[in-house]
Length: 199
Image (cartoon, rainbow, N blue to C red):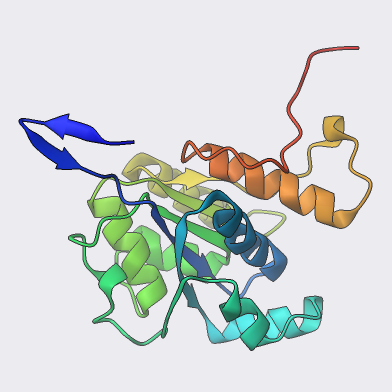
């Protein structure tokens, strides 16, 4: 897609920031990276140390396996990275999964890492920020934090299974959640099973 604006040809940036924080569900972030590769979208990955620990407990993926899925990998402490600046144009950012700690940092604007700085930049630039928050049950503080983020423009998208899709495996449930999250960016991943009405 190319837009002609006042005689200037401008190409939209087909790149997405992907954050993986330390909540259960590191596989969601891994599958987001797979989906973006399938869709031809450049992925910029930033991962917390807790996320790598979770990855080792929940999957057979090594840190090298995970980072190999991304187009560009940024160090968590690199606050000088491209994704720390609003002038670096992206389609937005997904945090998958998003821990309560990460969610809380983004909500306050007091960011301590590149992941939360990139999320803050996404909000201030009015780009889509989708947080796949992983926690249950939520207490009132969690809910108030999510409300504050929604008021700031973020989308809260806990990865909940869609049973109308009749999933045959955990991976199909993961892919359905990932694909529906990518829908929020106008990206149509083939793994999503669409509702076709009552049968």
